[in-house]
Image (cartoon, rainbow, N blue to C red):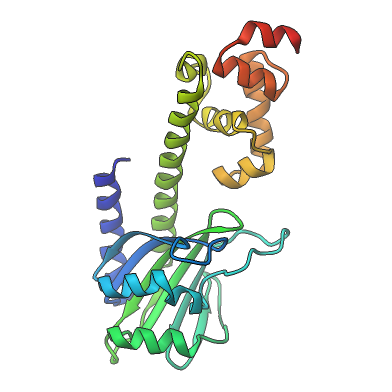
Length: 260
């Protein structure tokens, strides 16, 4: 998906979300809780969101946002998406099954948002890894309305899934070009032609030295699925370990494979 298609896709979902929720504006961004500066937030798309608010949020305000998972979850915690809604007086957490109260937006958060006329905000938090999250932010400026997030759960889910798929595909393409550049004969594509697209993505992560767990987090796959892909890759390329796989995909195959 190129940048124009990505913009068009986001715009379509954004228009639908605004209609379903009665919101004033919405945006899409990435949050990396390993960073504690302006690199923590990366805006990907916005519709009717003030530029000044985006800049203020990226530089400082995100640190006071109780929606964001500022700490990595426990290892056993499931990576599930959540939709949060907040006003100046209370904060509530909506899931697709039920609604319950969540305590506490900070004073700094609302005092800053008030400068832009925000009366109510919401966010869908979609985990990518234990440190990286895709966020759909929504705001309402009218004091006479309330966000109807329960009407947009399915649209938000679809928006997050399609955006995440586009982001991951783009990231894999970038890594692929990097790997190709390091190969002596620049023939990664030719050497991996027998692999499926997903197997090729897994193979790229393998030759970068990532563990099965890291590949699982990067590609949003289960550990079992990653292991299954690796078995198929080894079989198709007639190798038995990662060193042999790297040599096959990046050159010098005959000598290294004979040593394995």
